[in-house]
Image (cartoon, rainbow, N blue to C red; front, side):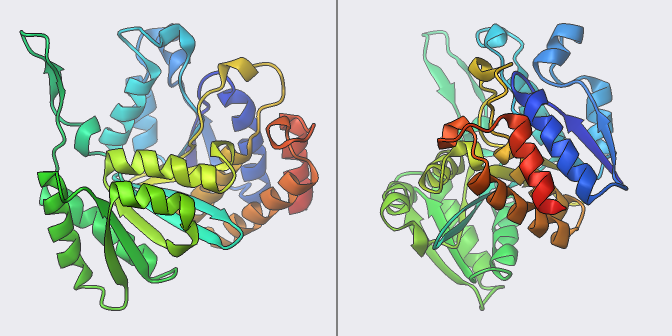
Amino acid sequence: MKVVLLSGDCIGPEISEEAVRALGALAPDVGIEERPFGAAAIRSGGDPLPDETLAACQSADAVLKGPIGDPEFDAADVRPEQGLLRLRGALDVYANLRPARQGDIDILIVRELVGGLYFGPRGVREDGTVFDTCEYHPREVERIARRAFEIARTRGRRVTSIDKANVLETSRMWRRVVTDVATEFPDVALDHVLVDNAAMQLVQFPERFDVILTENLFGDILSDEASAVTGGLGLAGSASLGDGVAGIFEPVHGSAPDLVGTGSANPAGMLRSTALLLEHGLGRTEEASRLDGAIDRALAERPTPDLGGTATTRELGDAVLAALA
């Protein structure tokens, strides 16, 4: 089996190193092939997603990606983030899974990832008006809804679909299609919640949610909110899955240019993403569970500065490996 590593920008290589160490301890038979991506790829060849990197990802079993983004390219015509959107589209990883767990809270956000406002027509009209268009086809909604219901069957058998059906035509279609798909899963309860109400409930009553199903923009916002409610973005991992293609597994936090070289970056989000890779990318559920448990123990024993501790990036990685031993 082959995993392509896209180590990312700024703190990306530092936290990716800890993920590679953990993956090597749990799955030593898996080959890891690093490829250029993001800011480093722009500097070397002018393209954040070189053709050879894309080809390697398309032939891999999974893609492990560090955070991208570099201040050098924030206002440039070519930016690292453009490579990520192209990679998601090329692999058609339409289902983004964002777990958020802490105490009695156990939420899985299932976000549609390759449609909606981020991928619709956009531009500037002659009069200076700027526009971005949200578009969805019923087929796109149907496949993400079916994935959410299938996952709910392995959890608490509850799906909450988030939309803005009182205002948006795309949301009205979304609600119709999700309701139709729900008839195929009579053992899974479905409710619909407007996105503004959902945002409030995530703060006040997060334990009420099991699987949250939503479109791209709403999912981007709500998943960050859920992460904040359960410990912060620095601890959160994600999996982006398609059908019969390599998934992309990546932390949800930024590239933290201010932490480069300090040795203080928290690798937990990258390690959580590695656990998701083991489970959803390589089908190694037991190893994924072991890694999640080791991360929990390491964070309790050797927290990094963002959690009030003093552990370095490497020291937290060492604690994870010790817990796996």
